Amino acid sequence: MKNWIIIAAVSLTFFAGGCLTTLPVSVEPPIREMGFSKPLPLKGALYIPTDTRNYRYKSPDYIPSKPLPNAEFVRPFELPVGEAFAQAANQTFSQLFQEIQVINNYSREDIFPLVIEARIEEFRLTLEYATYDTGTRSSRSQLLDVQGKIKARLRLIRPGKSPWEKVYEVHIPPDRLVVNPRTEEALGKRVGEALTSLFEKIAQEMAEESDLPREPLHRWLTQ
Image (cartoon, rainbow, N blue to C red):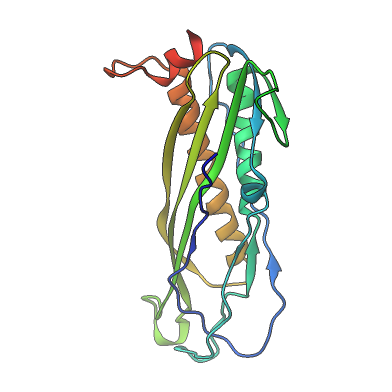
């Protein structure tokens, strides 16, 4: 089986002095009802490879510099992206299929009606400090510009059929945050929302018919 590389790419400028303990930040994908009329008549096994499940995004060390006097800065933080990825996959596919069983590994000898293998192929988070806001000099705030993207590879396996494989991508939309004690929490929330959007995009393609000339995913699952 071909191994796919997780890329954690960061373009940023962090400013602060001293050493701080890395802050663990919760990433909770929001649960949204997809509104499928009925589950697909399949019992699926969801497999998230260990390297994806254990992937954690870590911010780099701060660079000692301060563009604004007495400004607040983002603390070193860590995002459990892989755990949240697995959570988003499970809670979304559980709405679409008759049953979803989470498995830690599988082999050719295992007999499942459907195996869904999902892995992170790329996680990119771009953070950059903005100089100040548009308020008066006395009310200037440290700002943080945020954007990113997540790419995931989905591989589906059914007995007697050729595997189905596709790469999906969603973006973490550009945003500007005021730096304060809850900024790291806000970053985790945006990553969680992007993960939910990623699996909603995949689930909608699984559930819907398509007029594409090649065999669509919905027909692959139901025929």
